[in-house]
Image 1 (tube, rainbow, N blue to C red):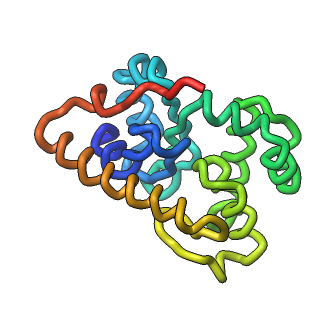
Image 2 (tube, helix red, strand yellow):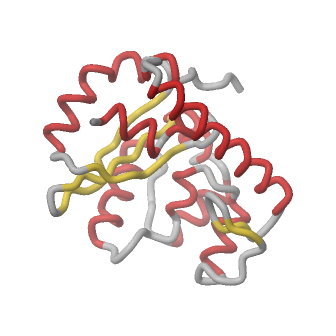
Length: 185
């Protein structure tokens, strides 16, 4: 179930087109951990990590992400400034993820800073917050408030990736081959 969920909901993260993906599956955290333990080593070698964010009503909310990319993002001044506004006081990866989990569990909906963790451009994360999700220039995988031409190119790449990954996985290509290694800086 976990592998199918990765291909269905986190294909862009597997392909290294996005920093992270958040998705929910009808499974308990224990079941997720059991499945993850079977593929964790190979995924970790490719720069991928999995965090359980919330369990409710028989469903588990998961965050598949590229840890090195997230750590780099957490070093950016504008990212730190935004996250401080929402109570993040440490930018060590484990502490940030723990606080994100706390915010998700206690929030109605998703915390406004979630775009940082998904790899959305900061202009769009800030634009979404300042406009309460309204007045975007265009909308695709996320709401765009700056650089719509570049965003549309990203949306097209992500859409094509979804088609290709779905087709490859359905034809028997193992997930281990679909998960690409993190790009070098």
